[in-house]
Amino acid sequence: MAIEDFRETRPIFLPEQFFVGQIEGWAVLESLVGGLLKRATIAAHGEFETDTQTVIFTETYIFDDGHCDTMHWTIRKGNEGKYTGLENRLEGEALGEQAGCAFHWKYTRDTPQPGGKSIKLNFDDWFYAIDDRACIVRGSAGRAGIPFATAHITYRKL
Image 1: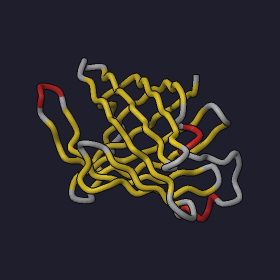
Image 2 (image 1 turned 45 degrees about the horizontal axis):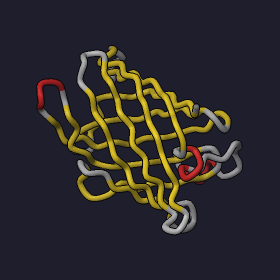
Image 3 (image 1 turned 90 degrees about the vertical axis):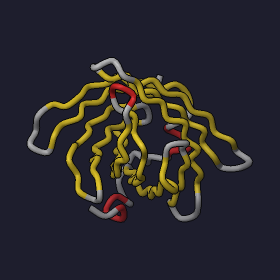
Image 4 (image 1 turned 60 degrees about the vertical axis):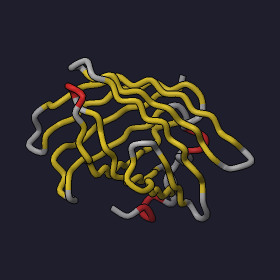
């Protein structure tokens, strides 16, 4: 898919609007052959800083095996639908593009695992606005550019 394919779609998904306020969510992670790997609930909150055009967004995943992962994002709006993001466990920065109802977000992150371990994963996430309060994400996670899991995530603004 190309982000340009979504230019004429509605409603428009703008990270600086959607990620502001209280958000709840749910996730399932599947292996590439379709087996269920994990389930999670998500609690998130974001604030928009107008002067820097930056979203400060914190989200916590609580997985069915009991471990948690909290991400502290700083998402900056650039020109022409481009976004960059920082988070304390990222390798480099996240890069995003927005058009119409879609937002495409890619990054590499040292991701906590059960038992105190972590693994460096490449993420490739597509967000799709359903309406002004809900979006669905289809993402992939992998290593060395080879995906091995798919995430299906639903977010709802409270």
